[in-house]
Length: 150
Image (cartoon, rainbow, N blue to C red; front, side, top):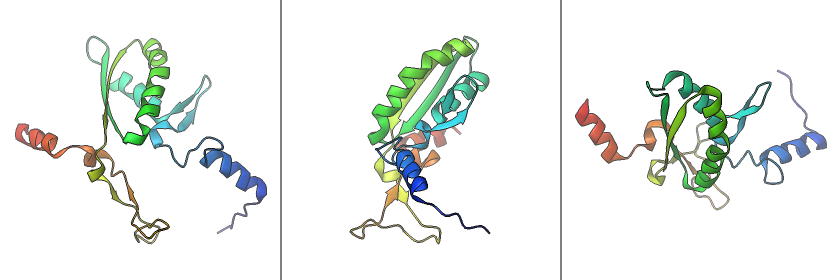
């Protein structure tokens, strides 16, 4: 296996990608990252979801309903991105979106681990938690309701 050497230029590039000095990708959730490049634009993961629901989830009135759950610290950025791009995709795919956004509950967070599956800790020794994702985002009352209807 090759070892990759990171010189000063590489460190500068990473700083501009990962920190608030540049794109701040280390802080942003995946939904807000530029994910794919197309001829006419780059798309974030959130935009890819808007495209996907336009193809698979539209009803007979061409309405696409989609629900996002986000962490509280990213809600504003998430809503800003939606407001900037939604009309573009509505026009492009001739749909209307009904988009709901709720806040992920902190008690659904899970322990972050390293490559050896050992808990990550901050500088003070406290275990680091990260958003659990997917089904962990549902409230217990919502799960109870879903189970009752199955």
